[in-house]
Image 1 (cartoon, rainbow, N blue to C red):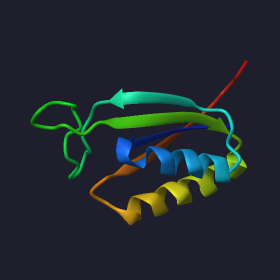
Image 2 (spheres, rainbow, N blue to C red):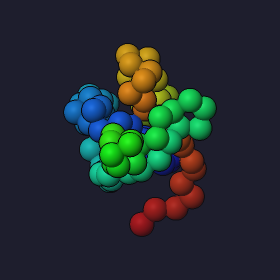
Image 3 (tube, rainbow, N blue to C red):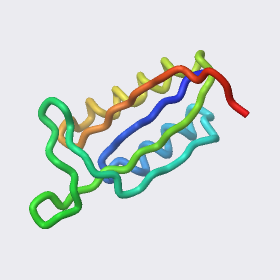
Length: 97
């Protein structure tokens, strides 16, 4: 099992939700109003007058065989509009109850 966290500009909310639905990923936790900045060339997302946009994030735990499909879908979404931005991060899940 892997945990996948997807951080995205709020403009992509419907696309991310649709992506999860298409991949039959039912369980997830959704975080609204996430602040941050991309590590390479991303604009700040702070919800302020100077930086008004905001991010959201989705965290899901999926079987190993779904990870590649999910990451490919995130990459395709990112390539649609690099300025809006979406990133995914994975880590191993040792146990779950």
